[in-house]
Length: 280
Image 1: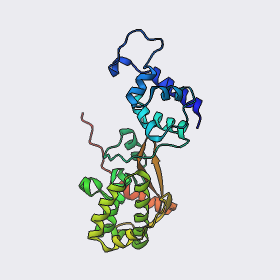
Image 2: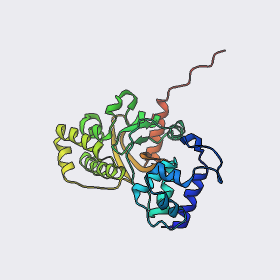
Image 3: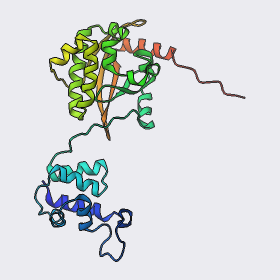
Image 4: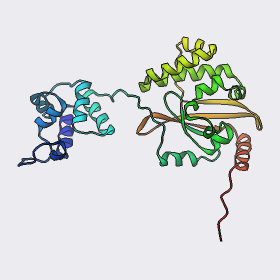
């Protein structure tokens, strides 16, 4: 713990706040921002102890206290993480926040990959965004109800997706073990438990794999698909965390060799909707 740096950071965050926005009197103040006792009041902690904390002699705070102080100072997610690193030497535990939208900027990243199918998924493996290449080569997710856009549901309940896997058993084992690891890491145990219960009821194969309690890290790897029109495809995949959105991951599939890339590119371009004609 870096007590001096933590105290200086808290002091700087306190100084930028407008007392009036919190309902405090805005009379004569020696320094800008909130007073220490006002922060302590908002955080429901001792004013003396908070003063010591800013002075670098308050001792190690608990995670609960840091969360209260972060809320009292209206810290951003990045600032809250910084406070944790200074006060406890680690980032805060991830609390899962469900969401079904991404920024236009992130969608443009997907769209900038014309011949590489790319998806954005949640820790429960719900697909929330995709590009044209994914629509053409994998699944037209826009035609699937949002509640059904789940990779585990596709693998265990969709006969077309199952038939496209060259080694379905290995793929199924991998995605179930990855799902368990992702959900725990993201704090989404309750959400994934509901999904697991539904899939276990409809698929004995999923139920058996879920009971095995296997855990793997997705990372990157290779995948072989049996495409109904292109035939066998050798693909590689890489998984990336989405900055500022710890609840989301990006999966990008790339051709495993030049010949496969050429076939995929031609197939995708042949199915790209032409722009409407420009009026005269």
